[in-house]
Image (cartoon, rainbow, N blue to C red; front, side):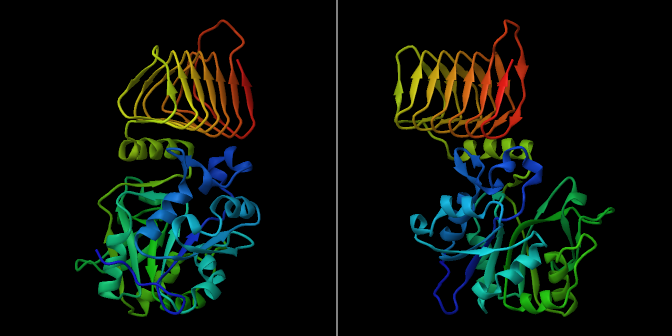
Length: 366
């Protein structure tokens, strides 16, 4: 598969949208960027960057917001770890995806570019998508996926020949179930289309309106239907689902920490450096971060335990714990999402099962 040739003059560029306030993932996103919430112990944004770099695109701009921009910068850096050049672009307020493109025009110049929403995960990467764009040279190539609830997304109506007939943002009565996934490739023609649209009823410049303008101007607008999985990680249940899918794909048996003779690891379990597993049972797929302590505990499938976490005399399954969490004497914790430094502690003799979504540095005592 041919890599995209990129350079500072005219090569393809990447634009990642990592702004917004993440209201659907609160309370976690009161203190953290939603794009940095981990899936299988790796920030969602890192998967996005990897997909772009794996397609050969090394010049990347990241749209950031005043609320979380500093955190994104500190986590991602200049892109050196991926061999990429990363530039940060401040969007003062979330005024729509097309507004983000407008804000990034100085970075994008007249280069073709891929625009990728920073909280979306897709299976299989974007190489095929980029190859199609290079081969067919459309003005827009949009990634679509069949969904069960199309009224929650921007959707595409497609002609019999596969071309785009119409795009509608979150229609009340959708005539198609093909949702816009959140990955787009554009020629510079999209800038002119954005200049010709007005804000929507919700006061935003919609990228769907800009693409629709390309259709109306009889520009070449194509679609690519995704056969692999796609997950929008904007809500707790979506994030847990993403964690399940990614653990299934990437986790292999890999033990770098210490596992004592009284512990049992079943299936695909990754144990990070400096972690200690003591008299515990772990049933994969599970990832245990670095410097964790797991003692007298059962950890069930599809759980991710962040670096530095301590779990003692507890049982949990299908959970995402961020860094430095503490869970003590909890009979059963399931389908839960715990922010950095969160503590869940039992102080009663009653037995309970719990489902929680708590933010950074929270304390829950039963």
